[in-house]
Structure formats: structure tokens, C-alpha cells
Image 1 (tube, rainbow, N blue to C red):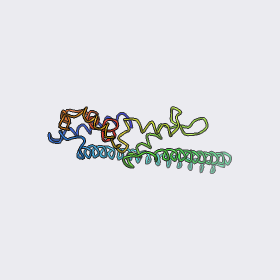
Image 2 (cartoon, rainbow, N blue to C red):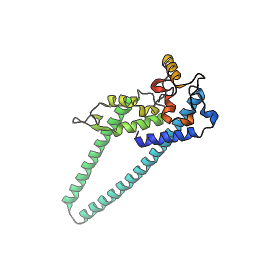
Image 3 (tube, one colour):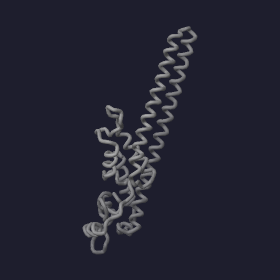
Image 4 (cartoon, rainbow, N blue to C red):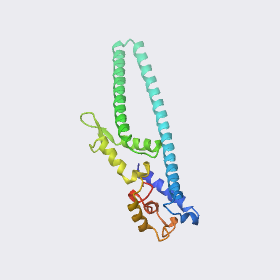
Length: 228
């Protein structure tokens, strides 16, 4: 996920939290209500980002379709002209070039399908929040792959797809894509004591916290119960 998208999602979540009334601002972050609030906010942001990506993909596909149609029409007109002028050898060469281009395109598609299959196989071992989150991760991973000297797909750094995906899944900036992990009892109690007063609630209201502090203030792996 890009820094711009991460910042946008963070700002939107902070804005939503700031609009909560005083009673909600004192909400215990370990409560089911707090967990449901954060989960709802994350799901909403994921949905909006997915919609935006679908719109951009649709616009791209439509532009490509029109470009292909124009190119095909131009080639057909040129071939017809060559044949009409009796330039048989040039017409045959053009047909040969076209056939070779199509073969190359099919080879490229086959190679990309192999890449996508490898990525899907590795991503299948991770516990994503939902299909939207998985699709987002898939696009980010594929965008950073390249073929090595032997034609195998690897990360731009040379790391294998498996190693890169593991690193990707452990990156805190991508934590929102995965389901929250269950917190261990001892770690949760220790973290809770460090962030809450004797009443079991935060020392200050949510409206005075940054989004990152809000997420870190609850117990669990990575600083909270929500898996962020």
C-alpha cells in the first residue's frame, strides 16, 4: 500500500474518532464495542479503496480496448491497400509480423498467469480480513515482481516470492489487511497496565490521541487487540 493511501486512511479514521461524543471518547479499548468500531472503520476504508481501484482498472481496460481497435483497423486498411496495389511480398511480410506479434503476446500472457498462480499460492497461506484485502495485497505484491535471468519471477531485490510475501505480511503498514491476532494473557495485561489508569480506561479521551496512539493503547500483538 502506498504512503499516500496509508496517510489518507489514517486521516479519515482520526476524523471519525474526533466526531465521537464525550461518552464514546472514554470507550474502553478492550471492550467489544471498541473492537467493533475499529473493525468497522477499517472495513469501510478497504471498501472505498477497492472501489477506487476497480474504477481505475475499468477506465484503463476501456482505453486499452479502444487503442487496440484503432490499431487493428489501421493494420487492416494498410494490408488491404498493399494487396490492392499488388505488393504481395510486403503484404505477406506484414501478415508474418502480425502472427509473430500475436505469438509473443500469448507467450507473455502465459508467463503472467504463471506469476499470478505463484503469488496466489503463497498468499493462500495468510489470514486476510476478507477478499478485498487479499486482492489489494495481491496487486501490491505483483507490482514489485520481475523476471530474473532464467525467467523466474522474483522480487525486485532478488528475493523469492515466498520470502517477499512473508516480509510483506510482517510489515506494520500492511497489518490492516490481515485478521487481528488473539492477544496472549500476560502480554495483554502488561500492555493494558502501561496505557490505562486504575479504572481500566485510557488516561485521556480518544479525541486527544493520534490514530497511531489510539491503536497502540490497547493490549495485543504489535500493541493492540486489533492486530495493527
